[in-house]
Image (cartoon, rainbow, N blue to C red; front, side, top):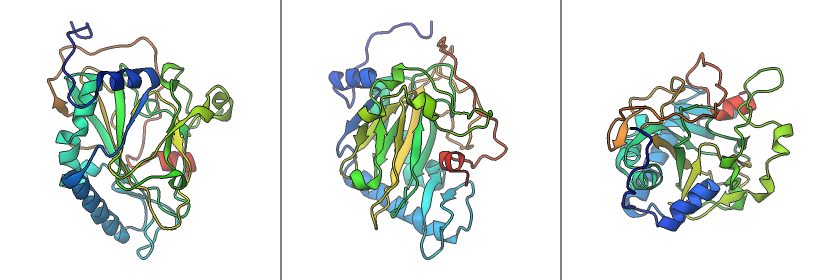
Length: 294
């Protein structure tokens, strides 16, 4: 029966202690995990997308741009669904080395959920307030994680992502305001119960990897580097028997694709519910637009 314990599978990329550390803290960082041709191809594809964004004057289902974005001074917040807009991103999401990481943590039957490329442009590129991922896309269970790839070096000045260790074992916080409006972040009253001072900031050279649990509290400050953007590629995966409860916010031909193993016979259910996000009238709305209102 689905969900019962099975014999452990041999690990492909992680050491047993790293898997234990992830389950204990809800996060894992690996320096320079993506190297060589893969890193070069991802960087080249990212540059192609940045150049293409020069033709965009307002956010759409491909690019989320800052209000002061111009052709001569592009200021990207996000490339939506990178796997749909460049074959390098698609191949990396489905067959790249990060899939081994997801399988080591989630098991042999593995499903793709969604992707995004956050740019966080130089000179004050937008912050991301403290939040959890799972309220944006609730599932029947919490065997869901996101893997981030630094496509350039990330230091303290560039607004690295911070994750609060152990917060994945705490409550799922309300991401609505007191009037019932979706805001996409945790309110100040709830944040008083989160030890954000203990956050581990995931920095490192280009090709470094972060992995965080769907319930882990995380966020990032603005990018205050004067000239360098902070391109950060993110792909979310789930155990195959962990099913989304809402339509995908951004429709992609890769939504729900089985990337390893097989389609499950039964879904896995966990008892703790997660409050549903609002149904979207537009599929382009991102966390930046939700949190900042533009």
